[in-house]
Length: 151
Ligand code: FES
Image (tube, rainbow, N blue to C red; front, top):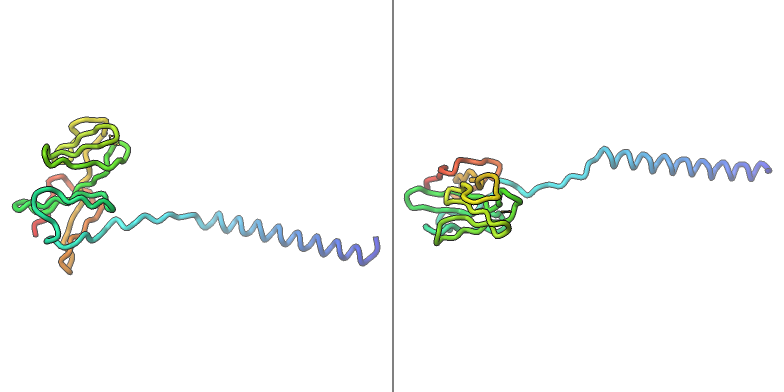
């Protein structure tokens, strides 16, 4: 092997070494920066109080919540997510109970389990009034089923 061939092999080896180190550093950096999946905001404005009728609850499908408005008791917001495996429950105004279509759980008007397999009651979320007069629901703040916002 002459000197020129030796230098060519040495250069190729050096390039391969640098490429290997670069790939390894990239892998280390990728490991240090985790893949993060951001959840949608858990605190959301749902509209003006006047947008919600008295009586039967308003179902907001995107938020998976029921908004109850009672002339005497005010506003209450219930989760529509079944506590068994997370299906979306429906509310039957005729018997004033929540029914899960997946495995048959039934929840009373206050969200308590009346028929399993759901292991616990539906969640109720804090609802407040913002400065600009809109209702805000905070799904991170679970409240007792008798919590009400009077407007
Ligand atoms: S997900 Fe509701 S009963 Fe199973």
